[in-house]
Length: 189
Image 1 (cartoon, rainbow, N blue to C red):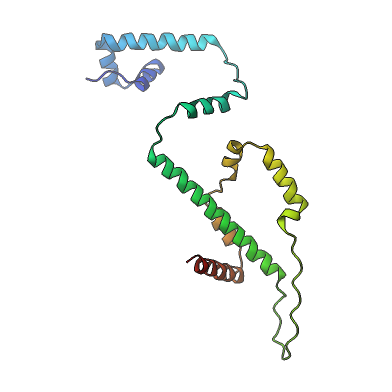
Image 2 (tube, rainbow, N blue to C red):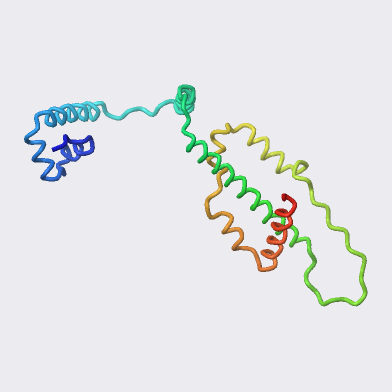
């Protein structure tokens, strides 16, 4: 019979080890010795009391040290990260398109009955460029002070964000979004 694994040793300490594994523990001197060492270790940890929280710089420094010592990157991990970035970029593009469609819809006049005489088209109201907006400037200044490692998890959209945004569109807005996506896909080819 195989020796006890570490999770089975924990079960033995907690008194929930299955009877067939308990029988092995009763017969195997090596497993009893390992259980005794494990109990001694857990007793020492419990006796140490509460461990203080590490310095706020501990985790970033640990991440840097691990990164500096990692020499081999599994290609499947690199593919996974690449795929996540592609998904995040796609989500950002879809979100921008939805916002553009919504802005476009807001600028369109309300539907009226057709008129016989054609009037001169009205000039579209000027839309401020994002770079000239005070809010945009404020956000970029704040973002410049936050480390990239902290921004990355926050900037990742949820899996259902685009679906939720599209579900809020009216039928006319959805049709316009499809038209814009088809036009953009055609210009990429």
